[in-house]
Amino acid sequence: MGSTEEDKKKKKKKNAKPQKRKTERGHLSSSPEEEVDWALVEELQDYMPHIRRKCINQIKKILRSDLHRFRKFKQQGVPARLGRFSVQENQQIRENISDFLVLTGIGSVEKLLFPQRFIEEQAAIRKLKKQHGFMERIADGIPRPCHQVYLRALKMFDEKNHMGRFSEEELAALIRFHNLYGNNWKLISQKMDRSIFSLQKRFATLGSSPGVGHGVWTAEEEQRLKQAVRERLESRAGPDGSGLSRNQLSQRLPWREISQEVRTRSWVQCRGKWFFLLDHRMTFYGNVFNRGAEGYNAKISLISTLYDMSVDDIADINWEEVAAAVGDVTPWSVQRMFNRLKQRNVPHFHLLSFGALEIIDFLYHRVVPVLQKRLRSFDRWAELQERCSQDRYQLSDIFNSDLEDGGEVDD
Image (cartoon, rainbow, N blue to C red):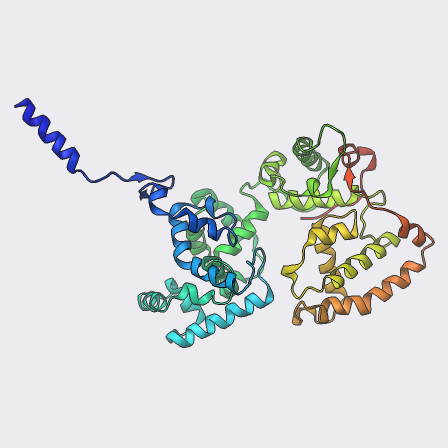
């Protein structure tokens, strides 16, 4: 009888269905090699450099929805778009959505993008979206993944994404809900009646602790920030004492970790404060964009550099290149100064597109001559023309307490 039971067990094992393993995210699946053609994934890497970091299910969806699109873009010689969406891309999204509404007869953009807000109609709306290939149509003509374009459309058209400043009561509720629900932003959004994106963005500047401060930094906070940043920068410094480059001093720092060590400031506040301090340390004269001769010279250089780039859209500017051309500044500070120049000098700038024929062209032809006239009135102008910017910086110069700046930055 024992042998019969053994035979039954062997037979059962032989006929058993192959076991599926669980992925790291808990989804049942076979091995990745059985599910994904990695040669196709490699083909996609030209357009999505980090695709291998995604989970298997996401990669499969991208292969289905985007591979044929990117092949077509490649044949047309259209390069991939990364980073910030351009004015042209935003306009293309608007046109694609308008065309889809006409095609399907869906009554509004809100119904199309947020069908869950219309309980009685959502099933019919979702059916129409699936039937007419909504994800691909909304991304038509835009060399980015469909899902990335979809997320951009949500940000653009959600009225709850543009509801003004948060009240003190809302900020307190945001902290309370995050403590209760963690990063379940969909649930927090429902409870606060604001968009997921606006809540995430505001929370990033706020931090999860009621002790996060605002306004002028205290000396103790600033010291904790410097100590935390210095520990990270020391690991980047080479043994030869050649110092650190501008990018090494400002790029790819672990701001969330640094924020935890500062304790009383969010990572966004820490990042902004460090860039503020760094700009005052990178030159003996303090802030490059001050009101003296150095400031006029730097602003002229900034505007001239942008003009020579002949860019049509702000999304196409390489701010690291601009910072290097101006000298002794961070990418953060040149972006900030460009926005100030635009707001203070260009009439109705918010009604203009970003092209060189408009905002930059106006600054170059109308503002630069005024700045040059003011610069010539300074005796040190000739000296400034010969002054060379540093390429490397010693940590002892950046953190020297004898060169403390007197300025403060509010957050």
